[in-house]
Amino acid sequence: MAKQFMLMEPKNENFNELLGGSSKYLVPRFQRDYAWDIQQWEDLWNDINSLDEEGFHYMGYIVLQQTEQYQFEVIDGQQRLVTLSLIVLAAMKALSDMIERGEDEADNKIRLDELTKKFVGNKNLVSLKVVSKLELNRNNNRYFQQICSKLEAPNHRGITSTNKLIRKCFDFFSTKEFGSIGAEIAQFIMKFSSAMIFTKIIVQDDLNAYKVFETLNARGVQLSTPDLLKNYLFSIVTKNNDIEDDELDDLDENWSELIAQLGESNVSDFVRYHYNSHRKMVTKKNLFSSMRRVVTTPPEAYAYLKELIEYAPIYASLINPSDSWWAEQPQEYRDSLKFLVGIRLFNIKQPLAVLLPAFKYFTPEEFVKTVKYLYVLSIRYNVICHLSPSEQESLYNQIAMKVSKKEYKRASHIKNSEEFKRLYPNDDTFFNAFEFHRMPSRQTAKKIRFLLAEIENYLGFHCDFNKTNLEHICPYNPDQQWIDSFGEGINDVKDRLGNMLLLDKDELKRATFEQKKDSYVKAPYHLAQKVTEHDEWNLDSVNEQQKWIAEQAVKTWRID
Image (cartoon, rainbow, N blue to C red; front, side):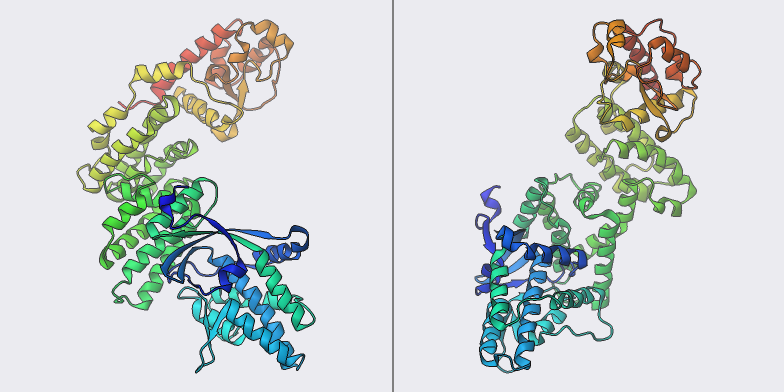
């Protein structure tokens, strides 16, 4: 990881070292609420019980942003910090109960005071409330501080669902056995806190935090990039302290709904495609810094948040054509779904920048035409010709901005644009790429079935690619009989589209070509019928069949 992203190199530190020093940790005001539930608590407790065998337990990354010399914002890791703190508080409650019963009262009071200073914080000399080393977000902090001060989890009326989870967590661990005497409880806390190991990363600011998150997420370590985006936008919205709590709560609720609709892993892509739908294109790497430049005042941040909230269900439904949201839209939109299925199946995301504003500004009929044009282009450009996705994204961005500015008001404006024409592979280019195209049929059978079904549909036999079977004419793993009859090139055809067709049932296996032809001739599929015109099946036959399929593909995916 590049050093300029961080104030210091990653460092392993245990929970004792994190909380036991003089540092204070603040969960940003708008970071998500506490959300762990019994499954995570049980898993963690099982890990703690296994410490005798393991010696330590790795808790993953904790990302902090230094705000003062001994003060840090918790950018990622608050769920784990809160849960570990609640375990300590539950153990301290067991110690407090011993004191109330008069068990080794003097020594246990000393132990409790020292543990409070080390893991929780100092008591205010006037109110005797604990000034905690860990402060939570605006929805959790007050309740958490009550537990810190009283070692009791209040169960008053009107408690929010997130604070109920904190109470249940505290109660869950309060039932555990920490030791029968005060010294054993103190020993448990010290041993367990020293065994919980984090990798601590300290970043300079929220931009560097975003870069760290994106870098780690690219390596398979899932950190909460959406939380970082939310915290930045909400902090700008409330900069002047002139937004009512009710409105803030409404925004917060809408953001939670946005996350639920999209799923955590899709939020960054959504924000980028939304950004690129009406502003000059940014890469994933530069998204956060670009957003910080254009969203600097409370009105800008508020408007931006409202836009994201408005577009989220559209994006979620564009990447999920089976979403029930489509049933709530006018009937005219339904014809776009078959094209969206194809775009989604091949995981082609570049059209999203155009489709977001097109859905908003075009009539349903014009939107459907736009989806069709982008679908056809996707098959030609991305699936078969494998041309540059970065150039495509750049030109789509130019189209999207013109749709957003209402310069392009119809699908034909897109189709006839210079940007679209530059991207659209002509018939010869498409035919040449298709004629010898290979697809790994073991890994992409569904995609191949889709392409062949689209050709069948064009030729007049309407079939559902989900209800067909992919047939290899020369078997994928041929036996000696096939090797002898096929001849040279048998190892090169298993992933050629010319060696594949669709059937209702997968029952021919390694039958001879003559036996297969008897079945093909009875099948309603045009590709199967075409194969029966061959007297034998060899490399020349595959080439001839695929050339014919390529001719049909040119007509199947064409924009006139």
